Length: 85
Ligand SMILES: [Zn+2]
Image (tube, rainbow, N blue to C red; front, side, top):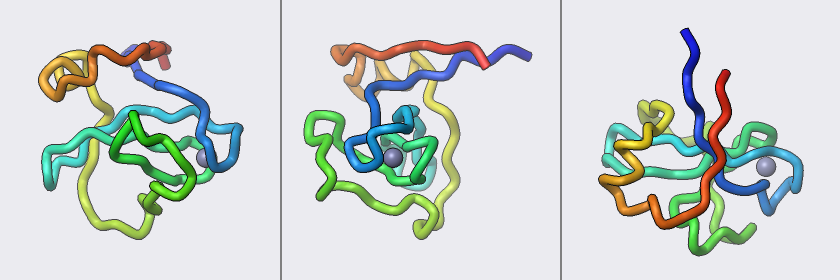
């Protein structure tokens, strides 16, 4: 099955990984997750190295965010990229 994955920018920490958009199901919050260094960022408007959390150290269930999630959380004013994987 082809899945649309949404990503925003390149990670400010490693400057390599794409920041994919996920949803933390525990607190119902969207966040950006780096595919390379596993760092996460909750606020796309404050995308800075000092604002990261290590997503591997947090215990919560997360799923890839959909376009509906993004509308619901008012993230749709940001310019996202969509890839099919
Ligand atoms: Zn990174």
